[in-house]
Length: 64
Image (cartoon, rainbow, N blue to C red; front, side, top):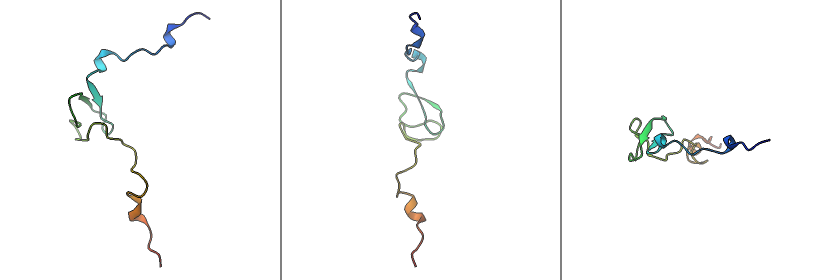
């Protein structure tokens, strides 16, 4: 059981700096871009479903 430095997390390579990956289409955009160059989605947009009630309210069945 020796000292193993391989278990420590390494910082990201400098080649990844200055870019962000679109959460919708996964295109790699420059850090300066405020929206995706491929699909026009804003930087930081989540792909999670909207909160309950936003879309599901249209699916309620009529009473009667």
